[in-house]
Length: 227
Image (tube, rainbow, N blue to C red; front, side, top):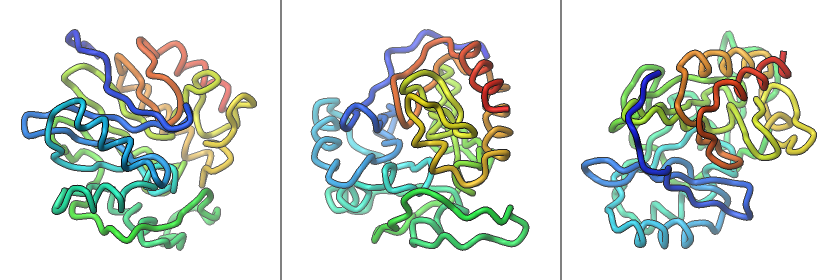
């Protein structure tokens, strides 16, 4: 996709392996994912440094390393909008129960649930601020990615990781196998990776690893390895 020049993506990381992103919007920041528990202070320090109010918290999925600091942030930001997919809202309740018609594979990974309930539930094709919601199930049943059409950045959650090389969550990367090991249904994850590649993002901003510029060739290779 065509993209206009953009500043570097704002990112905070915990232990060098788990990411939180800040998307600047006219009404304030959208925080994408909240990392591990006890990450709230680090995230709020980054918000203070950026110097913008927080408009919302947007979660790509319900695993514990992405929602771990949600309760901390909700306490620090009373009344903040909390956004998640309709399907993964059940993971925030701590439920791994499958819905009718879903593959019978057990939902994997850490699903600790949160005390904070979402205020906004989204589906494929919805828009949250400037971000377009792209359903990308497989890692979890309700996993979503977020495309910023202003600069072509794809916030892909765990649909792809870049720690130890670009990889899908459909097949374990020996250098960083955790996303694939926690995936719910790998064939679906692979199909989602293909769908995200078709968006032709200008940069890939994953839940684990560095932001990758011009990622299409690396995404192609990762998909081929996952097949």
